[in-house]
Image (cartoon, rainbow, N blue to C red; front, side, top):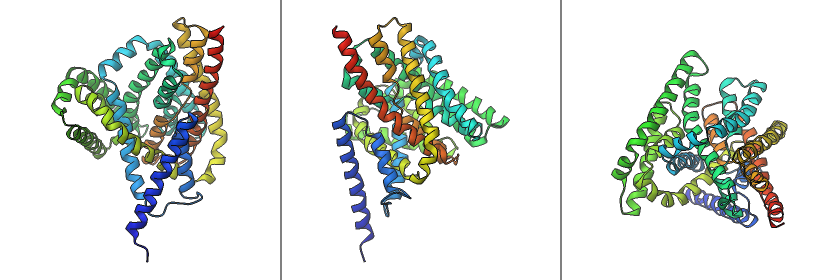
Length: 386
């Protein structure tokens, strides 16, 4: 009889090698690997062409670590001071971004009869641009040096701050529902988040210095351990582990954060890949056809509303037409954070269709967004050359 441990290692090794091949394909074609990871999950989950047998438990745990690291690193990228300063400077664009891109998901969720809390999750799914995909577009096409670059970065920063406020409120509503008690707890979560951000402005460097070490090994173990520990404690008091990781990431911004970013990035990428695969594993491919009409409709609206956000925001800054186009298409992709929001919702026992629709939605916009950017780049370069 085959050794179970050997089979588990062989299957896990095959999964990792498969993900490496997909990452190479994505790099060579200039697209994000996220849609490819989702397709792999669909192929190897229940109802797929070759369901995993021995490693799904490991991938489940790895995906949870991946979600924690995704949101922890999101918080780690920006100090509370930087986030609050950005929102003051770009408040008008922030309101436009939220209104145009949150409402379609919220309305769709209510129209589908999901109720208020699941609809709020779907609103977050449609609102948040993929920071990773947008940053890659800016880097690959050289747009970061143009006038559209700072605008795109400021919008992404605003969305990061919105996540810091939005997710704790959602966590409270998931725990208690849209009741008076739930709303009261959500208001308390909102207040607590605001207090944390203000405190983080005063103590982030002090905390960071206390955790800092000149040893890369000690530093990465310390920061990683703190992130997972706080996430676990948050889960213990019925707050999403991912939300706890996001907030502690913001609070830790400083010298230790600066040193740990590059050390943690490869680890985040590995576990994040498992997270995207695991989301795909949770979706039965046979349920996708029924979700496609809603997903395609939301994708069409989402592409248009993000385009409008970038176009109008660039217009307010008096940018030329080519820069307006670049700002507009850079915001279209949805990816890691849309999936993170859906993952939190599914883990909380909300409607299973949330994951199915989100996967289809990200597959569409995670592919269309980067391709549209390349088309715009070719046309704007021709126009600029005239």
